[in-house]
Amino acid sequence: MPFSSELITASGSLSKILLTSPDNARAEIYLHGAHLTSWIPAGGEEQLFLSRKSEFRPGAAIRGGVPIIFPQFSNLGLFMRHGFARITPWAFVDAEAVADNAVAATFQLRDSDATRKIWPYSFLAEFTATLSGQRLKMSFAVTNNDSNPFSFTSALHTYFRVTDVGKTVIENLRGVRYRDQVLGKDEVQSKASLKFNGEVNRIYFNAPPRLSLREGNRVTEIQATGFPDVVVWNPDAKNGAALSDLEPEGYRRFVCVEAAVIGMPVSLAPGES
Image (tube, rainbow, N blue to C red; front, side):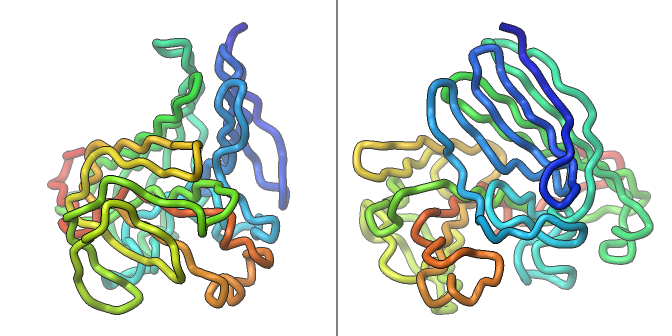
């Protein structure tokens, strides 16, 4: 069958694209934040967590899926926490068939009066989601359209759906230096597997390009190129309960593993991408 892409009005009167590959892998992407909220591999089940209490309204971040963090990660800088990309409408460019029985959907965000009040630069950001079989590929690119150089940090804040965070581990981080955002200090991962016993909020610097998210016999392979760092986050019960847009016990059903560039910000001269 051919691929399909359909623009519909969804939660909160926000628009989203329903994307289906020729082999029936599916994804849903809101124009609000170019926010990917669902990924179902061909013949498979939902792989992303989306909070049932998430706000779908202009100016609010969607809790779950894949928020795009740009141009600043967290509060590590002088600008808006996690930036404005995740709460700003993007333009849907097109969907097209690509190699290996896949379909790719592309979205763009350009600077505006509103973004320049927050971050005073002219830019073009582009997000592409490519879908086929058991694979989801996400690409994020930035072009400096300004007359001045600028720097930024970024992350693809992916909420992976799990059955029980307490039975979930992340593999292949042994020996990697990380900043523990909970304890406020740097450590080195000593164990082969990262387990979730309480709040975890870590930035792993210069992480391996391949990680595995394992829950029992289910394994999700995660690969990153161009994003040298990895953020791992789960709020635990106490902190999860304090999040107004997260349902009770929702923290048990996700692990965030984020491709990120934080330790060494990206610097672009005018015209560079």
